[in-house]
Amino acid sequence: MENDLLSLIKTTLIDGDPERTATLVQQALSEGLAPLAIVEQGLVPGMTVVGDRFASGEYFLPQLVIAARCMQAAMDILQPELLRRQEAVARAGTVVIGTVKGDIHEIGKNLVATMLSAAGFQVFDLGVNVPGEQFVEKVRETGAQILGLSALLTTTMTEQREVIAALEQAGLRDRVKVIIGGAPVNQRWAESIGADGYAEDAVGAVALARRLLGR
Ligand code: B1M
Image 1 (spheres, rainbow, N blue to C red):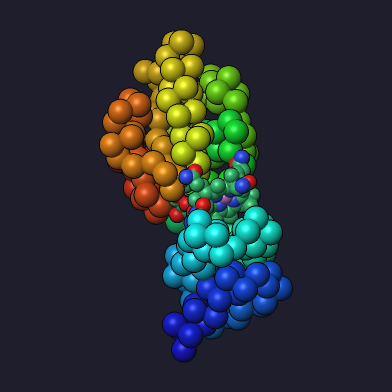
Image 2 (image 1 turned 30 degrees about the horizontal axis):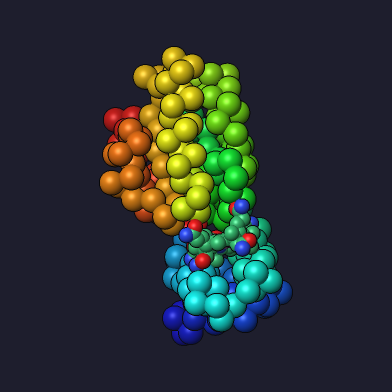
């Protein structure tokens, strides 16, 4: 039953039906499914199929756009739930996060930001297409201990390296841990650009942030 609902949710992304996504997500919550399970076992697998079909030429940009709308409709319902379940913890630390310059993918970054907030971090989300100088300024202004850089394109992942260089130039590199993520990046890339860590998903990002701050 639970699996049926999750696979129906997955199908609505593949078919591009945001209203039905929202209805089914609401139903899944009412039936007691955990919000994170709905994301990881329903929405993300649907998005993966859409991405694969786009890569193989079966789908075109409009299908990507409408799948993103399905995801947004779902997250509008799930985000308050994820935050409501926040553990009653002391402030875990301060994070500045954004998607790097040239890149407008925000769904994964938003999920990471939400999970960090739910884990007690104060999160400053700068949005998408964020220039390096803006990251540097926000880190300086907030005294954040963690800077999170998301990149979804092979053409924009190099911007993560540029932001680290900008932090170094501003004399802030030693004051902040840089964590990176996004589909094209991995641990090896993180090491090669001098980032402090890489996380594969939102849950991993929370664990990494906690670990880096010795929590
Ligand atoms: Co675009 N897109 N897209 N897209 N898109 C990809 C990334 C692509 C892989 C599709 C494909 O070809 N299979 C491909 C990139 C190929 C490449 O670079 N090699 C691609 C392309 C080519 C493009 C355009 C260039 C298409 C075009 O215009 N011709 C264009 C670029 C625009 C730009 O940014 N300048 C483009 C546009 C778009 C839309 C706007 C239509 C839309 C985004 C809408 C939005 O965000 N509001 C879109 C979408 C939806 C996708 C796919 C299908 C799905 C992305 C997504 O939201 N996934 C994607 C294919 C795919 O990834 N399978 C694709 C769900 C999300 C929960 O996962 O974002 O991976 P993800 O985030 C995960 C982890 O990566 C990680 O945790 C998250 C949660 O688990 N993570 C972090 C992410 N950030 C992290 C940060 C961290 C830690 C972990 O620490 C800081």
